[in-house]
Image (cartoon, rainbow, N blue to C red; front, side, top):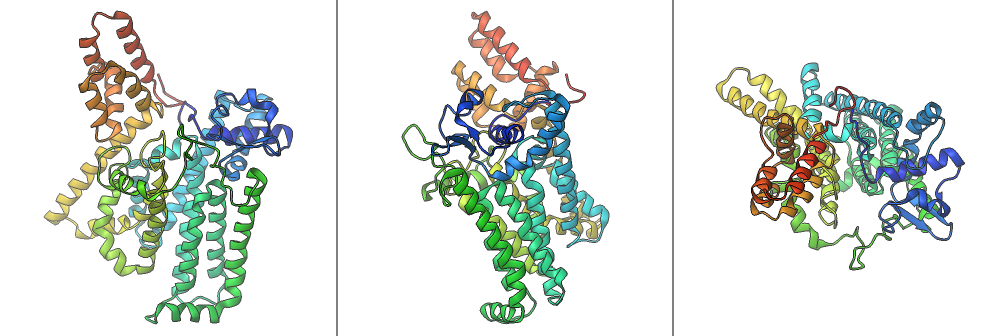
Length: 492
């Protein structure tokens, strides 16, 4: 459990939830502007200003507000008070417990997903553990922010849709249980969309696989026609009705909060040039593509989710055994990734790893379960032993990077980078700019704190600023402060 709150977006939903609990009103009245100081100074960055209603609304999904109610209720019952911006140690503890509940349910869903493709219990457990602890997923499952809230609805969305496809292909179309999986998938997607409107795009994925499901080699459009003609009432009841409910609720909430059904809450946040801060354009696509797939650094998907590399070796067999599931993984990945590549803030602002692609990477990594099974079946063959050594080395390195990053405050890299670049030394600039993984810098800070190795930028600063004792003392104190461990228990 972390010892620090996660600065930024989640404060808005927590403030809105606290106001809802203490006043019974949805949306924060303008006369509480002073209590939100720092979050309303830059118009539209965190809150949408509804002038007609004279209220601040969190520009993020209403689901974030409602899902923050349980830990805030616990805090109110424990402390007897609840501020809009509450940062008490007891609230952090309740939020940590809340996160653990979400993480456990997510792990359970991930384990259930592997059960669709593997019967070996221990292989399934290994898949879940490696997916969490050797990737940046660990960071977001423990951080008190929005991503952990999205974990369960996303996993439930995938599991129930895959289960529907499996049962439909097995010919159980007359069983209502088959169709309830389709509705359950839409239900989980409903929660996901209430948390982040962007995921409404996944409703198209549900529609595609709902209508093309089934075994056989008949042409695509004939299969769709055949499915509809045989099961029209079930499609209306289990797909159209819940999908319509999702869309109506989304449009209503947009209208209530932002004044228009088509307003998503992001239009008020402007750049210094007057452009929308959150905008879509093809001009971002090339840079995003390079950042995600080619260039080393904080956005690279292979560095932050390395089991994708190993999943490649299981793709061929996974495709042969589960073609529909394979294309489900690919389509979920594409539907999330391609639009994000056209997004002005595709890097995810201040964050660790390619934050906006987190669930796309979870989906596309599922063939890794087949890689694990191949490794088990090959046994003690030399080529398999060598492959296992390489896999263990890769994932061991990534695990070490995750430990380093999770050991310190979420934004240490930004704080340290911003300060030491003011020394104006090429060696320091190169140190921060050319690092392959930020976990390396976090590790260097930890080594400095343990007295094992002096932090390189500090050593360079000493050689340049040796006459300025005040500046050097400040830099040393700063590094010591940033080295505080981000663990609630057993921390320095």
